[in-house]
Length: 351
Ligand code: F0G
Image 1 (spheres, rainbow, N blue to C red):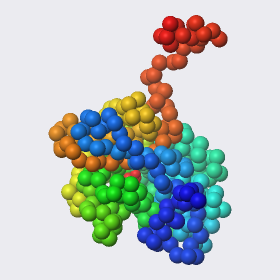
Image 2 (image 1 turned 45 degrees about the vertical axis):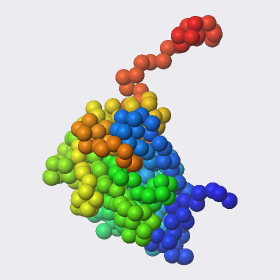
Image 3 (image 1 turned 90 degrees about the horizontal axis):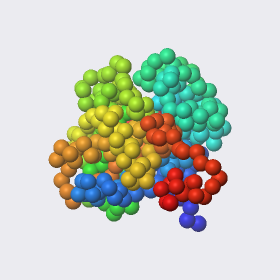
Image 4 (image 1 turned 90 degrees about the vertical axis):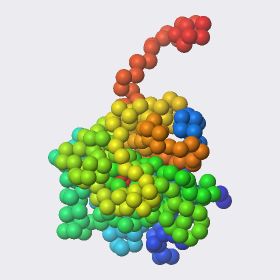
């Protein structure tokens, strides 16, 4: 059979699992690496999109969650907990169902996209909306996991990073070597940490000849790493990365510095512009936070920081269907027509 087996079976020898680890999977990973026509044209480079919205619950979190839930199950946990801006909770909720575990999620009140809330609900997780931001939720989740019998599945759990590093493996496996530059949105900074680990492992074992420069982009109103200080009241329309004190801050800086990369900010306007461009020109519908990578690449290109001829991969982290409000907002209402071909043709400009 040629069915993709999920990241644990595909990369078993590179992950901390043994023959007795129960594999809890929805066959995540194996996501498309799509050549980006317009972005390649605009930058003079070969740009690819790693479309992580194609994962089972619609984001890259599934790569980490298959590992975190499998390891929690192996350790005998009956319940898991996470803080989330939405995607982690959606993923944890689904994988907990597969594992027969209880899932508790803490989300910042009023600041998670409706689709993600729907996922957590439909998978039967226990949701608490916290009167605070993501950073408060993570503090609370950590405290609960220390005091009560519930396993923490945020990216501070090393199993999460191990799972998420497989995206870097897939890219090298597909391209035959590492790209020159890898571009990512940065929130809690787990994913940039994971990609850097994956790229370094492949380079160390000679599977790639090098590791890429890591370029991370935060939303301007939630850019603690760029500012060099935590942001107490992080703001951005990209709710997935509305984070003021990233847990993997130091690891993100290490990825940046060791790779000769950068971590910069993009404005909400630049994020939404990239979001629309991806949908209207590349045919790839992502959620706003995901577009921060592409917004960052375009900003860097405009500033003359992108030498032509390079191979560049942008991770687009989550599916646009999770947060469709931004697709509908400001768009004209579809016109209503009678059941009449001539009238429809006229409205479509065909007649
Ligand atoms: N993009 C999306 C769609 C996300 O959901 C997240 C993080 C990121 C990017 C940033 O990744 O945190 O590893 O730097 N979402 C977390 C959550 C915080 O709770 O779903 P990161």
